[in-house]
Length: 131
Image (tube, rainbow, N blue to C red):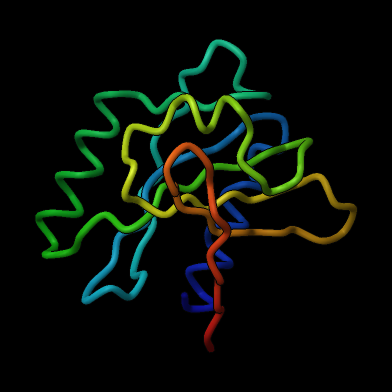
């Protein structure tokens, strides 16, 4: 992932430090290319994310129209580490996607980690930031 895209994702999470932000990351030829924020409509957005269905449709349409594909779903954890929660596992509507989790839980340092479903669990994937 480019440093520019990673910075944009981290900035998006910082804009709402008390709520989980969420959306998609698109790719071209398997390379992460852009982010597509989607509103979080969860009843408790500080602890969960639930993407707005109309926002999901619009974001996926925009991804498709640019000739890209949906690579990952991102969301933030305002007060938890960047690891999948039980709620994250339950709500996985895109089982083949990567899941990028951004943690705001560490003072002075943001952390983003990548995960992918393997059966009933999540396995961490290496996330490389390139200049």
